[in-house]
Length: 220
Image (cartoon, rainbow, N blue to C red; front, side, top):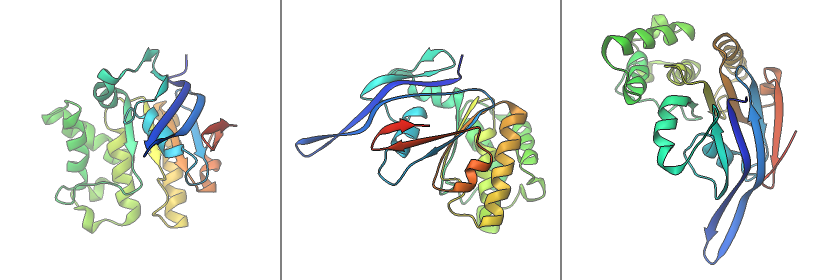
């Protein structure tokens, strides 16, 4: 069974007196260890769809199923903590925390604390090749290094699904390629599903599947 599924997902927003259908009956699935590139023009609904997959938004119709369990509104927070890791376009690091402390904080939110949090943070910091800079503040890190911290934060713990929103948008071509190679290695090595919303054609070089959204509908 697919680790992440969407069944007939629709999302409507109200603007004044009008209802706008952003997503129109989307079916989607991703397997453990699979990397999916989710592409589409601005306004196509891809970020909205990623937010629904990530249990940040609830669908107007349809359902999201994670590891065989349908997600409902009452369980969104628990599902996010247990099953999902996020990599954001703007990094979203705490400026007063070091690289490893940013990762530890994410683990604390998931209920992992103390020595267990430090051990896991060290593991993922090493996995993204930042051990020598783990005690640096974000202001002392390059853009690529900040993105590696963001990836480490998403990897921390045992979440089987990673969701990334334009992870190479703020990186130059060389660093962006390095980050993508790291994504591929970690997704395959740790058998995690990875969905990347992107405009970057280089993402296709690591993707197992390319999915496009246009006017709220999905195509492959």
